[in-house]
Length: 347
Image 1 (cartoon, rainbow, N blue to C red):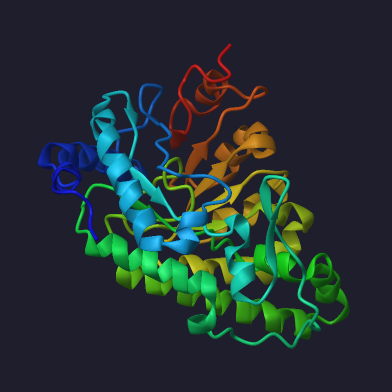
Image 2 (tube, rainbow, N blue to C red):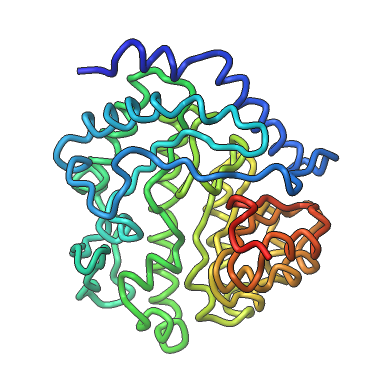
C-alpha cells in the first residue's frame, strides 16, 4: 500500500520546495540575528493535518494507512503554502495520547474522557523508577511505525511533528502528581534519580527520531505553529510555573539543557503560564535558542523581550489581553515570530 503518484509528485514539487526553503531561510536568518526579521507581514500560520483530533483511532489500528491518508490530504492543500505573507508549512502531527505519550511509555494507564486524554499515576514509590523497555511499549511501537512509513513514502515537502515528548518535570508530575515536588524537598536523592531516568529516556527517544527522520523535515510538537529551522529541538515548560526560579535553575535547567543538547542547534521551550521567575535562568541556558509563549505567558512578552539574550527568539501567540499590535510595539518587531493571523485579537 502506498500513496498515489500524483500525491508523491505534488509533495516533491520543486516550486513548492523552493517556497518552503525561502521561509526556512528567513527563519534561519532570524535565529542567526541577521537583518531579515519576521515583521508584521510575516507570520506562521496554522496548517493542520488530516484527521488531527484527540482520538485518532486509525493511528493505533493502522498507523501506515494513517500516514497515507494524511499525505493524500496534504497534497490537496499544498498550493496554499505559496502565500507571500505567511508561512503555512504542511505537517504530519503525530498525536499519540496527547501530552501523555511519555506517561504511557513509563507504564501509566492512559485513557480518554471528556474530550481529552488523561493518565493514572504510577503506584510505585519515587526513587524506584527503571528505564522502560521501549520495544515492549505499544505507543512507542506505533510511533516508530509511523516514522518509518513516513520516510518510506519519500516525500520531501511535509514536516514531521513528533509526539509530545515534553520534559522531565512534566513527565514526572504526570507520573506521580505533586508528590514528586514534595519529594524534591523530603527525599531529593530519590526524586533526582527518577528525574534522571526520565530525562535519559526522553533523550533516547529524541535521538531515535533524529536518526530516522530527515533533518530538514523533523520538527517537535505542534510543528504547524512552532516551526523552527532544521536542527532545533523543543521542550515543554508548562509545569515550571509551579516551582521557584532557584529550583528550576538548580534541578531542572540542567536536565532541559541536556535534552535540548540532543539537537545540534539547541531549541525552544514552550511556556503558557506565569514563568517570569525563570527568565534569568533561561537567559543563561546556552542550548535555549527560542521561547514560545501563549495564553498567560503572552502577557509577559515585555519581560521576556527585555530579560532574554539578544539572540533568543520569541514565538508569540496573541491573546485578547495582548494583541499582535501590542507585541510589535513592545519588540519593534525584532526577535519575534507571530503564530496567528494578524487579525486575531486585533484592536
